[in-house]
Length: 524
Image (cartoon, one colour):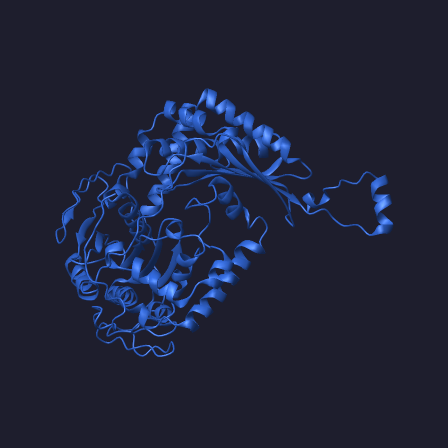
């Protein structure tokens, strides 16, 4: 990955105007306590309704050269017609633009190169907490004003946090693009002006509630957290998930949050992409106007090394008894890093084995044996650590997990020996190609992909040619990936068993006499 370094003095504690923040677009009033006072000189636009999406062929060929600061690299479109241009401001902000005039909308996507892998022991969850804090007001946008301004202009917005990045994004009617850019610059340049104890406490509570809703009170909700902790050893930067520890979250201070912002929320640690019905020259002028004077920051440390041996070398296993509707077998297989040919080969192997209702595992477990109600494989692509191949099987009726596991191992061993058939290979490549087309076929999806390849691999142009690398992989490479990685000594296994029903004392003896299934909870 190419690294951008622009040494500047840290001015993040200055008044917003001193930190280089530009005034808001003409006609946009300051928000006080979330009250919208004017949303722009253009008439208010409600929810924009449109249909159709650009057709992208599979033969896109893009070539581009990454240029020094202040220059532009233009990608030449192949038969697919997609282009992306790259720019860099003096403060280190990388900008990627891609025109698409099919519909009058534009997507703004801003990736910060910070995720849970950048956190240290005792301070987990800060990256995710900051995702929430970024919607709590900034220098010129108060309270929930970010939501109200975007939605009031007919746009949509959100933010997410992962192991490797935090991103924020808006999709707007084209004539409201300037508003979205101003809003993102406002919080990058002046969030510290509004960050206080009250907003910290509010968002701590929101994150705790999110954990209860998505992890603690959902069947199998702890699976991701448990398997991640098994697959990556204690002390590894990917050992904990982005939700973090609630104890760490409670211990985090306002100064911790401020230091985190100063370090990571700087233009030289971000990539901004704008895709859609845009005028590139005007868009760049707005970006320079609103982002150009925000100072860079040189305090970021590189993430901790996530390298691990190619194979775990022994099965890791945990059994959980919870109130779940059925027994489940889940496993995480250690796979190659994202961005490699070997990872693409593993992706194709997982697609043949567990990518939908035509896959081998679905045909074996759900259709033929009828021992499972669902069976599939997924891939968690990671650039800074080994990726994970994610197995998820829910049993049918009273079927034991051991029976499912034996069948899975049998299918994986057979696949490692035989490899994919020509029909399976063609179907898997077509499926991954369709998924790629779906991502690039919307302005929001393309903006996100351009940022992803820019942040993680140093080259946004790779987003436009990713499918060719998948289509280039051979059946022999897919078989080799399965043989090397999809084996019992290279996985972390998580087994869910339902909590047994507690019978009244007077019925227990009768239940035993009738040889009642001790695991009847699995049928519910």
